[in-house]
Length: 365
Image (cartoon, rainbow, N blue to C red; front, side, top):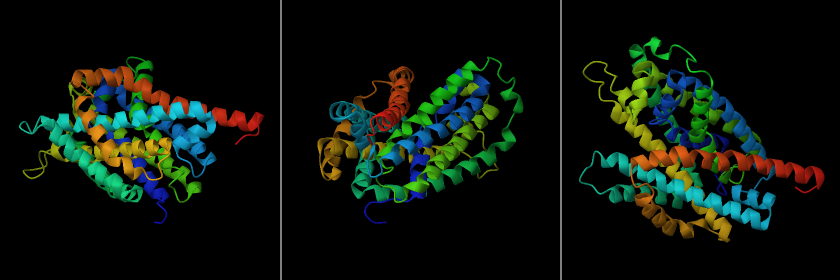
């Protein structure tokens, strides 16, 4: 590739991988607590709605070829309002970038008792900083390998679980009505759809063929929806909604149900590797979005100048961003959901509306 351009297939692999990260390990528990045995219906609705959101992102990006999300915001909203909204996006990207290593440190801290969480976070952030310094081309190529690895291991995992399915676990359907299903689909959209707003930091600015990007975005949403939906469905079918709801990491508990002879056992560690891979891509891409958006906002010619200092800020925040797991759960439900909905759906929709009004009534592009 030349001139820091990526292909549409790489756009697909980036978006699919980061959409999967928040759903594989823990989303089943959240949906089961809301929609019970109908959680799989929530995932289906969220996937369909996600296609509409991807079309919204494509329409917005294709109107301003060559610009990133920050450039689009400042172009549509004007100098001062555009600067304020752009700064909010930078803050959100940094905030989510800090949350990912907190999850990693919290998870592995339970196993590596004698290792300080800061050390675990530091190793995780070191890999992210190095990758961002290599640039978007390297990130895109890595995502192509990651999506193949994650998808292949996942489907092997699903096949090995088929014999443990109990169909009675998904009945009766819609026992509590349709409202819990819609609520569950909203929360799932917050993880696999609205959080993909930072794909506009790559599309259309870094994409070599904008005309084919629509298919890549739609395909990535469908693929992440299939894997996320199957994860939720298999968790309900094998564990039941009650056990899924009570489990912090239902996918790991699901892996303990696999046993094919004396060789294929203890596959929860394979699930951990898949989750770590996708979390790395989420942290990597949000950190890339944070550094590139901040450098564009303050007028730097090269974002790599601020990668190291921003990495140190994120590392420090990763230790203090959540005091404990209870606070994190409350923040996800009470703060993250409305926050990511506002910046992942409402503001992009407003950008499209303002763009249309300016073009229709004032002939301004």
